[in-house]
Length: 331
Image (cartoon, rainbow, N blue to C red):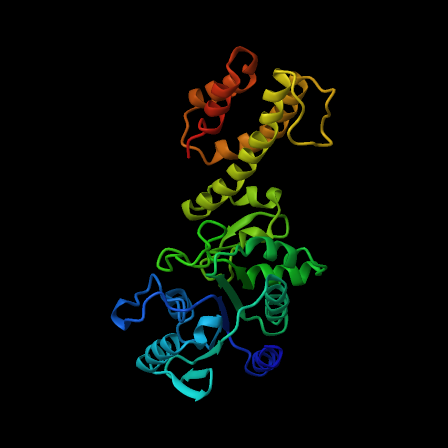
């Protein structure tokens, strides 16, 4: 694979594609061409055909199954019908689409995947290409993307990367082999951000809004900008909200009956009282509740009732408190 990957990097540097798509685990779920619809088309996804129509594109695929006779026959049929010409084994090109497809019959480990995606994504710093990665093998991409983005980049380079690179077009919602590709695509910005952090509408912006390249503080600036963004932001902040409760409320309940902590933390210890644990939980939840309220359909009265129930935990059965808290904030 190293030789093929070196050729891909060289090809990217020479041709300076405007859009690059890397698909991992993209063998077809059906071998009947008429059944290969846009929902399951991982070879040349609909977002690549629509968002980058008329632009130069590169499709790179990694999947051991691409080497099987049935898969290879089907994919060759699909590419031929869509006016791709076979240039050499594993390399196809469509003059009509201005698009090259490279098929690599190999699996990649998470370590190799990170190395490959890291190097390809960095090419945008020189070419300004859009880079989109989607995994269809069942593994998640977001932890790897966070590792990638936490590397030492200048602020200027970070801005280029967040505008041009997306690993997982579902933003953590639906990354697996059955991802419906008519439902998901990269979120495009229709705004710019001024030097003082003000969000300004800009219909001509061609940049991605890669949510996972921003800190929580930065993300709050984009709340209520669009329902599409709010949906993803809500799930992101709600996951943090649930993680706090699920981790620490178990400790609270165990301490109520004189048991030991299930999860250790630097925030408190075995000598801490149940009330001290609950005070910690409420303190950690407070900023997240404020954020979730901003995206919620709840009335002022419902929000007040939720907060009252939250702080009145002593008067409530702990399991009832838990259920009412995790289910109490309406989208």
